[in-house]
Image 1 (tube, rainbow, N blue to C red):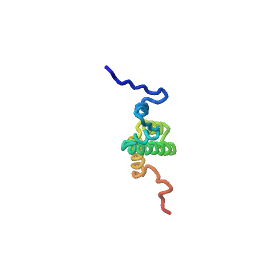
Image 2: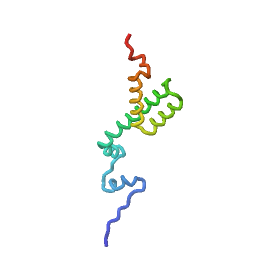
Image 3: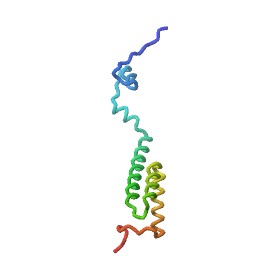
Image 4: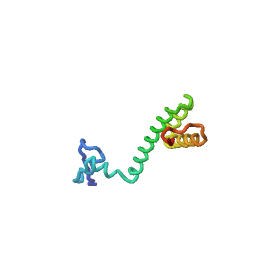
Length: 112
């Protein structure tokens, strides 16, 4: 049986070697650009939004004078380990506390 044996250069990664053996060569940038699909266009903005929301909540929790240290620790753990649920729950709780009058409104929202 006369099968064809392909020998790939050892300097190329396995994903690029078949393309190089076929006569073409794709650069790493071409491979990455081809992999950025709709999933990438949705996943990366959501990842950025989640990290930004988490950082905002961590800084906000740290600055709340009405929370005890134990409450701050609970909210920080909840925010860090449940990326979207934790920050949204904290922001909704903060909003409910402000509407109920348990928190004084920020100085930005007061009218002169």
